[in-house]
Amino acid sequence: MEVFKTLKPNAPGTKRLTRVCGDSLVAVRYRKGSNPDNIYTTVELVVESKPYLPGITHAPAKTARQYQKVPLNIGYYETDLRQAVKEAGAFWDMKQKVWFLTYGKVCELKLKDRIIKIFGVRIWTCYVHI
Image (tube, rainbow, N blue to C red):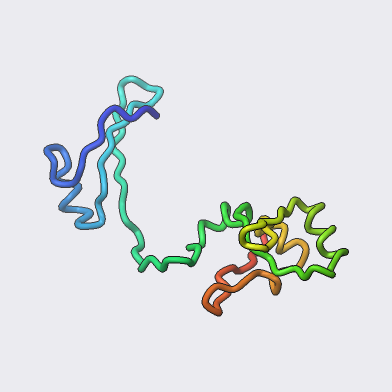
């Protein structure tokens, strides 16, 4: 659907939705669908608010999480493990001196305990997709 107008809260044309949604309203969009007789009104809402912590990667949605790259602790002499993660698509970051691999592959290879913790907290959780 094509967006042809975007309005901020309390602008003319959004007052009713501002009353309904309150402070969580971010934007109101008017869209044209494939049927030229219909105009769709959509809203963008804030559904969660939490503090931002610098240095910590905030977990994305479960569907995107499996593709996010995570740092792994692999010792220099663990050549077999290094070769296995290389074959899975890992790469070495020379600046940070860590291996990075997608989270989904880390779960497949059962390397969750190798994920580098930030501030003593592991921020990743494996999910099994059925």
